[in-house]
Image (cartoon, rainbow, N blue to C red; front, side, top):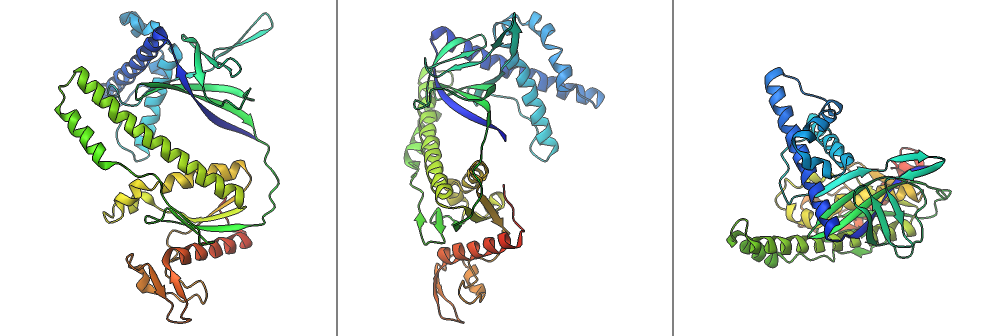
Length: 382
């Protein structure tokens, strides 16, 4: 089974390489905005617009007018047009209309691995050397990297690379096509998990996993106020923006680490994992729970569980989001509709008088419902 895996490395470019990366990011932003403007004008005049391949054909003539476009990787410029095409596809699927890219926001560019052969020798535009800790990229040549120190070689074929600038630091994400050998599936354990706001995860084994990432909102507000006081275009404004970016980067990295720790534990210890298919976007419209959902990465945990379950040949079963898991007694199946009130954390079953904790009871019911679906063969394994 062939899968695509992304590996992120920290880049350590020299001054010339860093300058070229910044130029490439700026040129890609220019190409994106130029052809977005071209699409808007052409649609207003004719009711039609050029395809991505028609726009790519215009790059050589545009490069003659703007000679600085020739200094950067041409593959990155073409990928900017494909990014614009993807933005229009998302618009047709119901997302917002594509916006012009602003400077210092989502600074990155993508380049593809171009293969050539000459006199029986094969050449690649992207090469990864973990022994010498370098990566070869178009135009940049060899750049020092750091990451995956326990690996000596990456097995697979390099497809593309994304170079990113974040909080004044440079990163490269390498996409590699690998052969995945999955173990045989022999289910011996099952777990139900209730994803919530007060406790991030409550399992059917009555284990609680809390969100260990605490947001320093006072510092965030203070930095944002400091940014608003700085004069636009000044060095102090740039320094303040860099402080804000580094704070958010620290939060993102800590959150990623927490998510991978949680998902690895669930995947390694269980063969069948059952959860609810939550509609997080609709839940965020409820202002009582919106703040908690923003702090608890519920949808990201489910997303990571999906691909890790696929890689390890485990079963991830998602039950109907409207299943009243919190209201049903896991002992006698009595449904207590009073438990709809989110403030009611503990309750006693009027039928069998069993005392329940809201989240633990929900996790047990989710496990039994998932087991029922698995036994019936009506499963949703992703």
